[in-house]
Image (cartoon, rainbow over all chains, first blue to last red; front, side):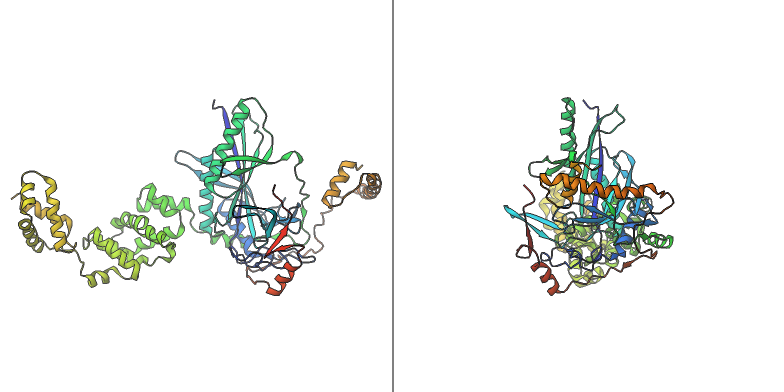
Amino acid sequence: MNNYEASIGLEIHVQINTKSKLFCECPTSFGEIPNSNICVICTSQPGVLPILNKKAVEAVIKTGLALNARINKKCFFARKQYFYPDIPKNYQITQFEYPICQEGKLILITSNIQKVINITRIHLEEDAGKLIHEFGNKKLDYSLLDLNRAGIGLMEIVTEPEINSANEAATFLNQLKNIIEYLNTSECNMEEGNMRCDVNVSLRNIVDKKLGTKIEIKNMNSISGIKDAITYEINRQRYILESRRKIKQETRLWDSNRKVTRSMRDKENTLDYRYFIDPNLIPITITETLIKNLNSEIPELPILKKNRFYKEYLLNEYDINFLVSDKNIADYFEKTVFFSKNKKRATKIIANWIITDLMTKLNENKLSIKESPINCENMAKLIDLIINGDISNKIARMIFEDMYIKSSDPRNILREKKLLQISDKKCLTEICNKAIIKNSKAALEFKNGKQKAIYAIVGFVMKETKGCANPKLINSILLELLTK
Amino acid sequence: MLEKIELLTVASFARLHIDDKEVDGYIKDLNKILSQANILQELSTTDVVPTTHIVTKTANAWRSDISKPCSYDVIELILNNAPAKKERFYKIKKVLK
């Protein structure tokens, strides 16, 4: 019975990449001693006044521009009032009727469809403190509050309920994360809670125009968790609807251990937040000049970069997706191609070396590509040596190891280790002849039709030349000698 | 006119406890205040821009993104002023069941 369609809307909270908090000068560093990044403003001492961080406003505008949103020229801050100890003021400074951005969109690209997901708004607000209810596995009979996070700038990105499946939601979040990382307006580190998501899910019979009753799943902090929670919730709601019962509007929590959503509070007594414009913060005026300046700082975004990579480098989809997934990796790739002397042949080989060898090594050492001990220029030299036939792939891997440790020019390592590939036919024929004599049994077997026997002889040549012989050349010489 | 349920809601927002026997008195007083405010409704405000701020400054009031940690003494003062502490945390009533 597949006559239901899911409508999913996301509210994504993204911690803005600033050095200081939104309304005070406290640092925003993660993992500090509890209640050490606090001051009179973010702990809401009586009589203090907030002072807005300009960079946070700029980050929201930039993100809005990248998502094709309209930027409101005049915006206000509002107070959202609720009683919960994570905000000592009893209200959160946020934006209500006049957010910085409205009416944006993101083009969702999955393997079989492209569709537009409209973004209702992006607004700026302050984060709340962190509550702790348990120590390790031990549940506490009180709660603990750490205000280090309180007051850090957040942008809340709200989508229309136009996402129709768990997979689309995951793709949307990955694409959004990718864009924000390109803009560098947030670290988007979900483990550190830089990006958190509330998910609204409702089901409707496809013949109905109206959306069904929505369920909100609060505070999700991993994309895989969001996927699981949506899948669970769609199945749960379908079961209720198919058994002709009604869905109750409520907020639910995702239990990642039991892989179910649990009821948290129902929306019958919807909280009245009593929003009103914050009199302590004067309106923000956003000028055309500021928008123009910020627009010029936006780098080439992932979708455009992908299309260009297809055309310019003729790589396959896997390679391009990998390279473009991180702006720094894409930059490293392009710079290496730039330094290469044989660009046309080098692109695919460079992509392979970055994706497999370099990234594996960097991941092992927990380094980012920006911290790579091998710079683009040396990487290009290594690839050129391979293309010119100066070194075999095997030798290239050995040199690569040395380059990684010493950050040096591959040609210097070659010279030091005397590893230049032997492509001198006369010299190799001599060694091959010797190899056939030393491996007479294998030679005989090969002549009698056992093709694989040649490997023993090739192995001998390799050993004699310390792996520097050109493997293609050895093969052709041996075949020539053995079939004479 | 204000009714009991609204009175109790407003009281809960203000964190006030109101006894049953106080309800009538509060309703009477609050309705008196509201009817005073009602006089303003007689005036036409169609051409009046809502006043959101007392300063009508149009330039932005914002600062550069520079972090400056608060002095240790002030942080200690803030923490010591908390009704209850546990190590460096604020200790508060359990909020999750």
